[in-house]
Length: 270
Figure 1 (tube, rainbow, N blue to C red):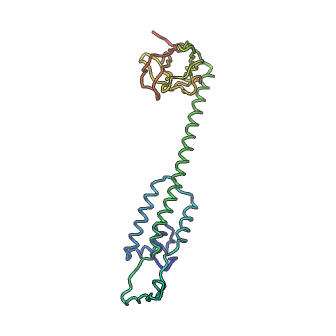
Figure 2: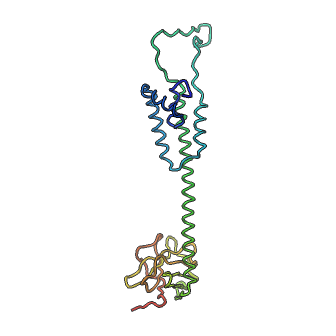
Figure 3: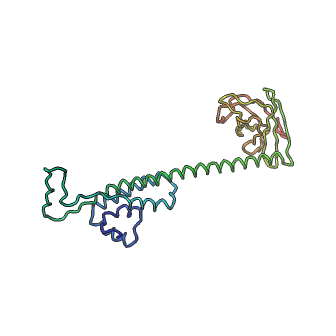
């Protein structure tokens, strides 16, 4: 391995930073060293938990930076043999260790490595989390933009359709509402004029009216009460278009009487 002490390779092993010969040698060492085996399990568990916090991989350069940071960590300083324990004339020299069988002592900097690896992995997971959050925001914005473009295209298609026909009616607050219908495109657009903004906490909801009752056809933008609104869903067998005032988010069925109920051009009513 790249170091004479195999006990120093646990972090690199978990990060998959050992060359194949070094990996094989370290795995053979693991079979006879319970301390290193335990430390590898701890590192692997930490990496798995932190990795689960972000679905986006960190930048490729981050792995190299983590490994460099681990290599640069200062090792724990061992006292020189025979060094004095304190200052002053009464200080006695440190006793010589008694002879006996050699015992394995893990290097002091292994504790540093454990916390350093956890910190580096936390940074990596944090960067990945930021990247994931930024990507999700951008992806959501792209989806919203595509949906808005599709609605605008469909709205323009209905308004400019060769078979487009109009029906208008008065709204109690003094405004007017016009529905533009295209049977070829199976779509309808509600065009308000002079329509006041809905009350606080309420929205204007559009409906298709037909023999089976009223079915939801989308909400008007409360911030733009005068903007044309494409009705959601196909016209199908609907005979009219209505507008009601509903709680924010809309309703599955009308909770108030329609402000206006326009009969679709060409519709057959009883």
